[in-house]
Length: 415
Image 1 (spheres, rainbow, N blue to C red):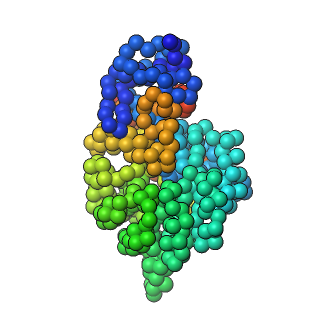
Image 2 (image 1 turned 90 degrees about the vertical axis):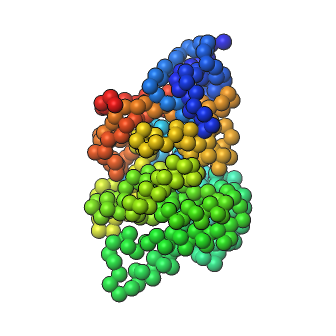
């Protein structure tokens, strides 16, 4: 039998790494895996590379909805081009757009836009607020899961949170945990600090997590972008999930003070101690998901006195993974676990997440090659990265989507 495509390389699954493996691909699926002997119409040899299950990003903000108001920041074409560049084959998109995803009709409209433009698979979360609790069941026809904010304009009230969590039931739920009452009380104090990070202390995250744990009725809850190490012990004792972002594992409060709005995120960057402890916990396998929290804003917006929160991370996701492996000692199988296997399981995407016969032929192939991040290499429409100027020890060489390879090259120096 001749396969449409044969990929040869060092294959990484969440349970093991296998040298010199051949993957036979036909159409959009993996049909055979052997040590040798496979023949293909095309063969992709990947020496000095790691072949992963296609990365699945549980948390991204691609900005586009039918209003078109935020298309200047990002749209489904540019955002998924950035995902391809970063080795991400499936993106779970958040619902906080100008027309928030609060009902099935809005979710269907976004799905149609994505169908016309997307270069990778996109799935969508529905937003749960005080005003749409009766819509939750109907949204389930279109949503992969749900998102709840405990702070800022789309937040749910403390009183309605238990009802909202019950309404979601066993479906995947991602919760942004910052306590708005504490944030507001700090803002009302005489001489309230101008810096956003001072108005959003670590305690705001811890209070909100305790509140979620007090009414959690399902294990399919994921606490978004934890930023302080103390959050982790609470989450694990409660038997639910958590995620961490590249920016919280790489940058610190000192970087935020220097670069100000450019590195403004919610929750904010924390201390060097928190960064190191979270990185250590990730290396030990205590954190379930690595997510981009891709949140593109223009440079002009990030230069404002009240800059919007968030940074773009999709383009550099693969570079950051290489940094974790080659510079921080993270085992490749742990990357396959947190970037593919666990996200697929959480979202009940049974056709992906591992390199196995019968699974979708989504693969991320990393090459060990030193790369400096430059703006002109990026695919995101916002055109910048918080990692510009930094060197990474690896890059995405190929991203394979449904059996179709996309090749990338970058100016580089051998390690």
